[in-house]
Length: 249
Image (cartoon, rainbow, N blue to C red; front, side, top):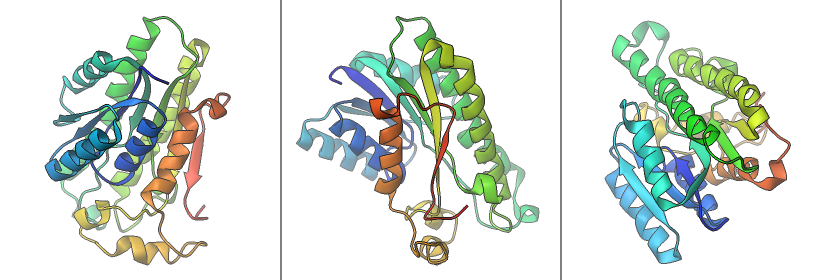
């Protein structure tokens, strides 16, 4: 895969960072985004330099109007873009719908769904204007909340992820004739910092204990599904949402 490039949004920590590691081990150069986690981004870059991987960090708001073009341009500078992983996501504070502000609703929808739509549009547009390859792949990271609805916690987040899954299925069918694959990964409760940022640092352990497997997921377990979907082993898979949920349905 020498010379191929992947974009990973939200790559400085958690699932995104685990995805980045796996993709660099497969030989991809990676461009990743982050918003405020400067220490995490520096750690990723240091680790990449030590392993000999080519990794570039772009700090900024993924919802900015120029973000898709900036990301795609940065990828083009490193080689041929073949993989897009839309991973960046936010929840806002945990609570019932009556407590959420308009600002939180707007931010969650724009980060989780709007930015994903716009980046898919940018990347697909570039791919469609270039020579056809068989290994171009988009993976959108959803959430089991898209199915459960997350009542009493963040139904607005669940709604945004349901939108991501609809986008995944629709776009997959739209671009399949051009041999572009689009899939999703739906994690269950995973041990990342997203729970602390939502105000419930112990949530992963609490909810994970109620799964059939009795624990939360590890970011690398989610990343493994992403890695498989972008590999040739998944060459006949498109429009699918893969559950990595510890048995939660």
